[in-house]
Length: 209
Image (cartoon, rainbow, N blue to C red; front, side, top):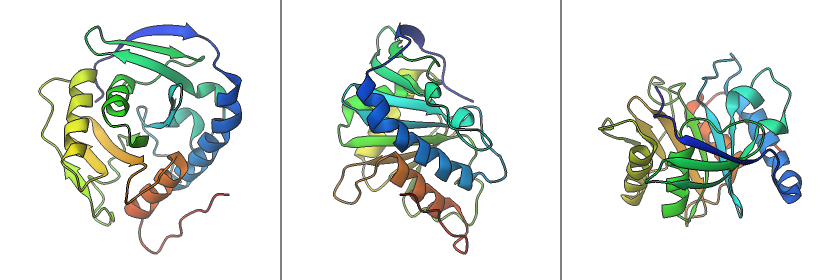
């Protein structure tokens, strides 16, 4: 299950050239790590990658650029802003951002040290008894399934400290990366950590350069 849809405001079908040069490679590397994680093709419709940039944040559905797909940079959307009161998400690109983008906008707005997010409905932690997840927080079910409520809950959970993996019943799992004392994770290193924490210890972790 995903959060209720935001109101879409597409600003442009394109985005600044520097976004392509600086971040497309990062997403391509992240997609290759994710494909390794899901070698069986178990990619959910609402799995997505997020990376903060100066212009807002980039978000891409994993199903488009993950397992069994050639990397398609046109699947990456640039989110400019999200208005909590009106539920309007302003974005640029050719593919509309997935449900949950408004929640991530709140997360980035309220917690400036957070830089990357991986969301999955595949229950990598929930149903995996071998998962190596030393810092996992399972939250209470949301009272309502709107973007603002989910975003507020993610912020409050992270402010409690001692967690960078969050399970939200009915909304999936959130792996959070950023620039903190413990971690300095961009999207690729966040995905590598996810593989380490959710795969059997005997399985190797793919290296990217």
